[in-house]
Length: 375
Length: 138
Image 1 (cartoon, rainbow over the protein chains, first blue to last red):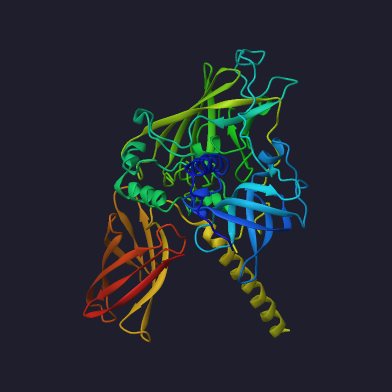
Image 2: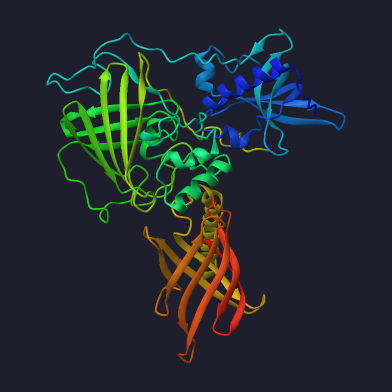
């Protein structure tokens, strides 16, 4: 094992920028809980295995040092992002010599997140993800159905889905600016009070989750993320409006790649005691002009409803308002009512960007569960 | 025949237990940390232990529940938790075998807050007896 401190300030700056990009890519994958961004590791070794699977692609390398040979798992990014930028599983081959610089895993595990991988036979840096912004359609009004209702999905004959959210975590709207990273970790711990009107136990739990870098996040174990979080997960979501049967199908492109229904056939919401508790709850919706208003109850307590670790109980009741002011923008607003967790109802939200001419891609959170075991 | 049947049952049970062991960490209850069913025991030494099952529920104002639910259930009189330290104090009123009233006071600390296997350990006072206790969330 060869660990070196990279002293030049420019190198540290580059590393921090890369870590910031990595954290964005890994927002659902617990970068802070897994890797030590304050330290660098430099490794030279021979590629022994390439694991090109979601959510993280890895190369495994044999590293020789004074003690002997050890095998390291090097995380190189998300396969969808890598392929988007032209990289393939065949970019490197088993037997290639590579030099890796990156952040070591927390603890003493032989795992690292690569900030750069240099291929010895060509000298080229490989698996560089440019983090290009998602493509944006030309400005246009929101598409409508023949009867004038706003379409939440693509127009006939076109493709698209809802992609990046403007916020990394749910925060009460009146809190204005609460700086967070892409995982929903507060930049300033003292801002916890601004995030939501917590009851004391809920604030203590939220702070515990923040202090422990979100290590207990159920999403890291590929469990579903109900509530607002489903609309801010990497890899987007899609609405399929099945008007003939009075329901809207919500398809999740990231997380555990799940789906649920919003019923728009005029049925009444059930009573909380009647509803079978689930990750996504029981949703009924209706249109108020150009706004889809969705009422959801019946949540279980097995998930975090936002990045950053907002707690809730079975008493959670959400009122969500979806509108599409133009082709490219979905406005999402949610009122959270959970008197067992928060001292009053509160409202937050964000906007989501339309990604034209693409569909949500095939992504399975648990695809490389074997490789993600830290060894 | 009978032995074979028992063997298959044991094997299946072992597989189920193994499966649950693997999957449990992901099934944590993420709401109020005390809500749920807790099992363990209390006693004055390692040999003489008394089985405990506690069911607790946060209703938004207080934690309510029972010790050993069933015909001999004991209703919890109060559950106090200091969220700055996660110290927990549980009180209840039971009866001994002769029907004499016994007050229960359990004082402990909640550990592994984010884990499915979070636990409370501490001191258990019941009537004139004192011992230690440990309960783990199921």
